[in-house]
Length: 303
Image (cartoon, rainbow, N blue to C red; front, side, top):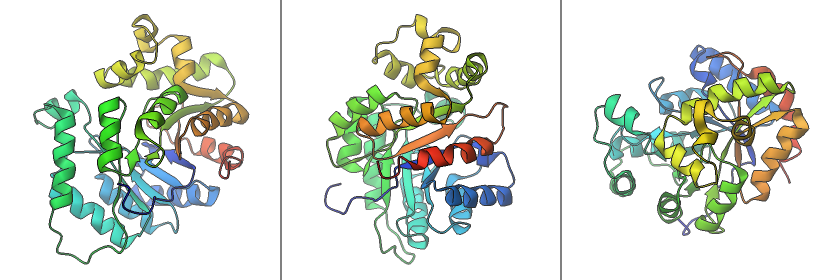
């Protein structure tokens, strides 16, 4: 969408599902702390929890400059008119602080959970974006454009992100993927990959935490197909992934090691990296990792 000024998103943000597992008031407090720590954005997922637009309204109202992003809003969770209205309402209330990440999700989360037909997801996304663009809006209009990125892993969706959105939000990727995505997108569209991290130097502990993360996504064909294109084999992905695979997808170690992995995405062409600190316990809140990583990651803000 080259006909408008590029969205100015800070280089480092936080991707987290942890704000779902605490009361809304506590989520607001944590968002305010993330802002104070210097993180520029917070990315929220959507599966079957709080509506992400309602959640972003709560978080943005508790902060002053933090950008709220959906990572991602499922296009089968609401029709295009509803999504357009939600995005425009948040954009009007919080100009240039709302980033709409849209994705096609996965077969099981669309067909089995929601009862929709997961058919031709690329065409469905194109039609959805066209529907948003054509949607009426009778409320007070925002003074800034709705900013949107697509959850894109492979070339066709990346090209659609360059054509009909502000850019792409690849998830479960490597810096090598980021370099390839930048080549496909071209120079102007935003590229905002996610990077999972574990702050801790014990290999067994870090890999155990990382493998709990990787095994969730290795159950989804979309991610498996993307990973295989990066040169991994089916054997690398068995049982949650080999040590080599987990080490490649999850940055672990001290703060310097994690900064180096995040910097690799920036050097490969990312405009912004959504850092996902993995908690040691299921439904845990990695707030101590956020605090400890903040000074080191701050060195990348102007890199």
